[in-house]
Amino acid sequence: MQSSEQGVDIGNWRSMPHSAWAFRNVETLIPTAKIERGAPRPVSGQSNPLNGFGVTLQSGRRLDLETFEQATSSDAIVAFVGDELVFESYRNGVTADSRHILMSTSKSITGLIAGILHHRGQMDVEKPVADYVGEVVDTAYAGATIRNLLDMRTGIVLDEVQERRYANASNWDPLSPDEDSIEFLEFIKRLPPSPMPHGGPFKYVSANTDLLGVAIERAAGTSFAEVVSEVLWKPLGAQHDALITLMRGGTPRATGGFCMTTRDFARVGCLLLSNGRLGDNQIVPHEWLDDVLQNGDPSAWSEGEFGQSFAAFGKMSYRSGWYVFERDPKTFFAMGIHGQNLFIDPARNFVLAKFSSQPNPIEQVGLTHLGVAEIRRCLIGS
Image 1 (cartoon, rainbow, N blue to C red):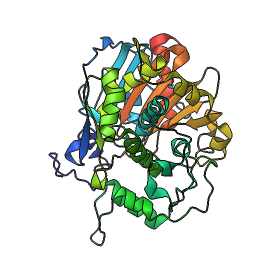
Image 2 (cartoon, rainbow, N blue to C red):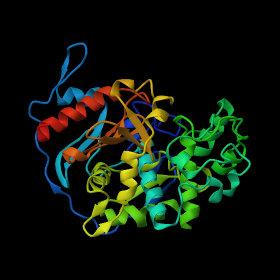
Image 3 (cartoon, helix red, strand yellow):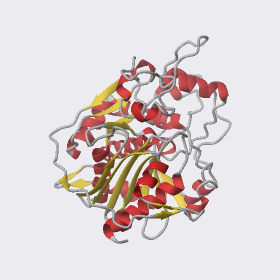
Image 4 (cartoon, one colour):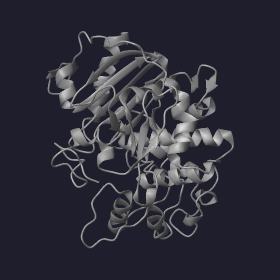
């Protein structure tokens, strides 16, 4: 597909300076499927000034809101208290009507869809993946459960050749002259049995969630985009249609390909603040949200590949695509590369969505968390 912005293409869309435009125009670069909204529910509230905002770095330098947004390459920030919008800020051409790619915060949305199907009896997350996707029977995913996919606790280890095949199938990168295209399930079928057991420490493998997306389609008997529309997007009252990028052959990129407006992303968080309920409609089962907050395994996290990097944040867990701070009161968040986040603080009834176009895949994580806490302090005093 060709971009309408000069110089942006599939080979550079995740690199600065191109990403600031590409992240809000993904459908011009990559095939997508539409996640249709239903009747939109109006947003109530208004943006308030952040009087006294300031984040102090270890160097002693103090950042005001403008320099914080610059330092974290912010594209958009939207905050709610309960169901009331209390702050929003847009940069780099993003507006309230712009869809932005979620990157790996998509995993958290996909986890919610799995939870909804589980509690409807359409999918059992304790069953083997092979019960839904028979193609994995003789592969590295043999014996893995849907729960293993959700919690990033499979034994999958990809070597350099397999990583390249996965990138090829994912359809986010150009093919090199000596490559033939490969579809996602063909990539999966070429994975030999894993030498590592499933159910061990946390290990971040994005293919897990793409495979979960396939299982969701098989369990529901319809396309991933249609499932998300029917069980989440329409009941939520989203203001805009969302998108999901498609891998080669049309498989949904459930691990990173959601695109939506910042307000709609934040309102997913508002739904979770209300324990998954909107009016008389229980959209996300409260038992699933209780499980996210209560049943993560801190040992699997601390012994896993992110444990050391996040040690300064204290005790944590990862459950069904969500990062959980195991402290009192508990908070949880979604995180994606290049600075995509959704923060949910049930005790303070506070939600904040942040989209960014950071130059490097992982940077400014600590500063982002400090800034979010300071925004919250400015708005609600704690």
